[in-house]
Amino acid sequence: MKREVFYLIWIAIAFVQNSFTQLFPDEAYYWVYSQNMAWGYFDHPPMIAAIIKAGYFLFRSELGVRLICILLSTAFIYIMELLIAPVNNGLYYATVFTLGILHYYSVLALPDVPLIFFGACFFWVYKKYLETFSIFNAILLGVIIGMMLLSKYHGILIVLFTFLSFPAIIKKPSIWVAFFIAGIVFLPHMLWQIYNDFPTLKFHLSERAHEVYNVSLTLEFIGSQILIFGPITGIVLLYAAYRCKVSLPFEKALKFCLIGIPLFFIMMTFKGRAEANWTSIVIIPVLYLGYKQLEGNKMYVSAMRYLLPISVIIIFIVRIFFAHNLLPGLLQIDTGENSKEWALAVKKRAGDNPVVFMNSYQDAAEYEFYAGMPAFSIGNFRGRHSQYDLLNRECENQGKTVNVVPNYFLWGCDTFCTKRGCWQIVKLTDFRSYSNIRLHCSPEKLIVRSGDVFKADFNFTGSGICDIDCEHNIILLPVLKRVFYKQKKVYSDSVLSFKIDNAVLKSEKEHYSVSIQAPSEIGEYQLCLGISAGWLPPTINSNAIIVQVMAK
Image (tube, rainbow, N blue to C red):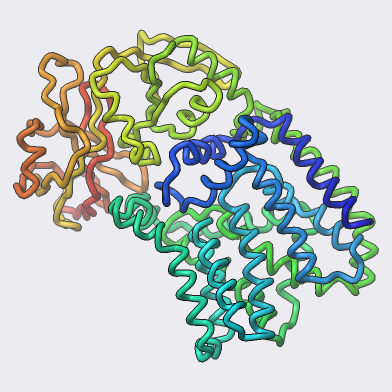
């Protein structure tokens, strides 16, 4: 097959898929990023926002959101072709076409797409750098490292394992030029993190609830890796890549990444769940080493004649599911299907008022995209913070009329049903919410007896809300609550005897104490303080205290 024909077919399939597939929830969330350009975001660095912004400037539709990612994923295949230099282009294209992960990233606007693109660029330039340790190659390498890190933090693993595979490289003066350039490229994002008090690092390192280790977490992650590189050919390539013997520094780097990155995330499962796509960058060594190992294998060449049509059928079915879940009763897959119809149904009831979604930044994003109306999400004690906490929309709408979409059932509320299920909406004419109030609790860890009453100290560390004295709104007055979590689930919550007003918010140096009764069951808990606006659930306002409850 001619090169031009393959790439035109690949792009054409992506465009056809796009016309039948509404935005996935995460894509809509990243689109919200692009509407509020910055050097960083709550969950990720800024690259995904920049490329969505560029595409959406050209086409104000799903195609615009995905356009640059479609081109980058296609360019990734081309760069890998240059790296591999296949003897048989037709076999290489057939192999690529049977890799499900590349079809997944060929149409969706996700941070993994620029990550694997710049990852391929990194290895392409790194190979040239090993041939000629020139300043020019070092500068180019540094720029690409910076772009990888601006795409997704996981890019640091590529750099780490590459240089672990060839420690002597640090003796080359030019490599320090590469590190310096990478630092310059990444510096604006680090300055953004500092200015915003490191929201991303705090979320990933501390705010994310950790699970008590269970072997199923590790086994599920390992199983997901087999599935993500499927349906068939990817597993064969994965096995062949691990079997591939390497000697050259460039191929050693690929082998180190192939083994090191999955191993790193397997170790991460000892403290919580690891997502399958976190190893997406491993597709580079899998494709390179696996293909190199198999290209001259007559059995593999012969098997591809049978694997190609089988894989195409499976991938075609999966692509249909991207656009339309054919088995909604059996498969709970949130692909964003029917999002536009759902958003218009919400808009019909909300009118021109902003819509507040409890614990669903994805729903808020989808509503903004398809309804074209303002929305935001508030993470309560059963959820987490999101980019909406940095956009300050909660503060901007204090005292205004909004419509709240709860994440639990409320009696007597307006209920309506769509193809995405039944929903409720509540109109508030004097909206109040206090998630922007920050408290710091101490100590970090306590050991108490079952059922005992103990003291928890805290102080207010800043607030984006200037005025919370709203005695005229007795329904949504601020109320301090304590919440115990056990194994990531809410164990219990209750109201504390502490009045929150403007005076205590402004006294950041003042420390306060509240009395809290320990749970009756022994075990380890996380204790957080949250602030409710009347009947609304408490928001996430404090750090967590680890409470070890012992028997009496």
